Image (cartoon, rainbow, N blue to C red; front, side, top):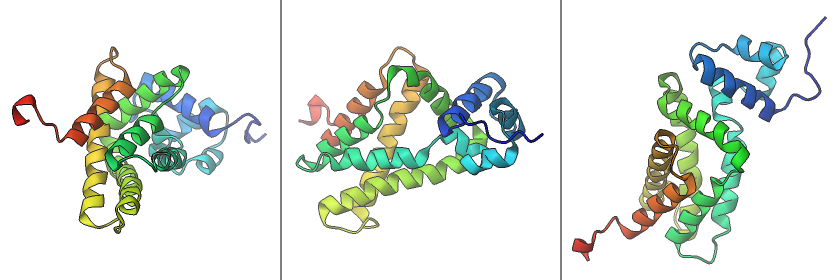
Length: 194
């Protein structure tokens, strides 16, 4: 009898189960076979949903990128840095019931050596979305200097916010991201600089 795919198997269900295993056992100690068994599917079926174990840790990244594009585009009438701040904040707004899973995911991504090379690919894609958007706003090409700088600066601001949020359960992720992007837009000037 083949395990096959239960009719209720979804990307979200696989992610939820895998994140739970990663949190309990550790990323390195959890195998693809462990995840497939816990989900109740075969290894091949699991790979129809995700190309690798690293991709499972990142979740549905295509959806994340589409959401980022949409939220950036919603700020069409705003100044560039205001639209960027709002877009990144809104693209990271999750329902309260998803925050625990997001915290587990970001703890893995920011603290697991085995994920760092894969993370570099995802970060490059994220920066590319921001640079392409900024280039469109500025009438430049995405690989021109300033759009690339905007992509890198935005990623650094977002990552610093996530790292702080992962380390402190008392802080609000959206407030951290908002504060980071307000500082970025202001050039991190102090009262003495004014």
